[in-house]
Amino acid sequence: MLIQGTRQIYVVDMDPQPPFAPYPSQRIGPALDVSNCGLGSCSIDWAGMSASGKYAIVSYNGDNPRVFDVNASTLALTPHAMSTSSFRCQGTAAGGYVYSLGHADVAVNPFDNNEDVLVGQDECLITGQTVNGVLISHVMMARLRDGQITALTDPNNEAYASHISTRNINRPGWAYVDYYVEDGKRFSAEVIAVKLDGSKAVQRFAQEHSAFNGCYRCEPHAAPSPDGRRIIFASNWADHCSTCGSSSDIKDYVIDARAP
Image (tube, rainbow, N blue to C red; front, top):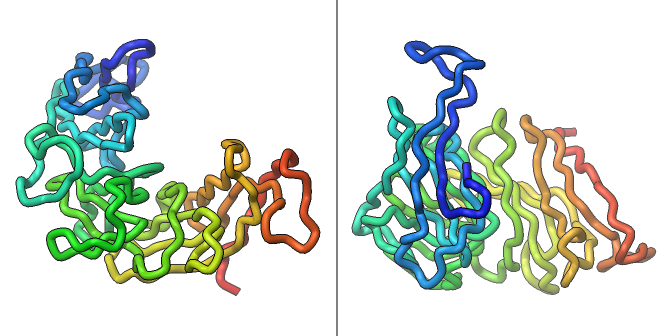
């Protein structure tokens, strides 16, 4: 958790297990000041936990994620040193920084022994370049144990990814992505799912039809149900449509992703 008005974070155990006293007994770790981050800006965009609870993550403004170990006994936080061979465009390996990922979400990767990962849009802004043998795409995955990166899509003629969700906790191995409008490019204004195995396999579901430039609430923010069989997104249905609505009339739409 992030303490409001500060740059301090701490961990709360919401369901203490033996040998710790059960809920409603409180189990709260010590606060850690993360304001000395070594970046140009140490303002915090968001803070959260990895899917397994093994790590905490702080993402500083500019989409620069930093990983912390969580002490299983005390819940104290310490920077998790990454492999020095892993690539990042901001921060240091020793400081716990991984590849810069925007609008990211956490998951465990069933194709890699359930390793904790962070999946997001490329915010190093080097799509199409090759780094450590990896051709950078618009949807990237960083392994939290060592910072290793994996491209999840093919960057060739790929539109710019917008938001990523891995709330499909009962359908592991996939991340759901919505895209910006870039006419003529693959996945433009689409909702898709990408496989976490690095095969670049995708499932394509629907067009968003939302004119969201300058309108935050009009952004699709596609998110799957826990089993991945439904996907909800927002749209004003005012883009690339035969009968368009008002750009201010924002509705929720649900995709039926069940196999026919």
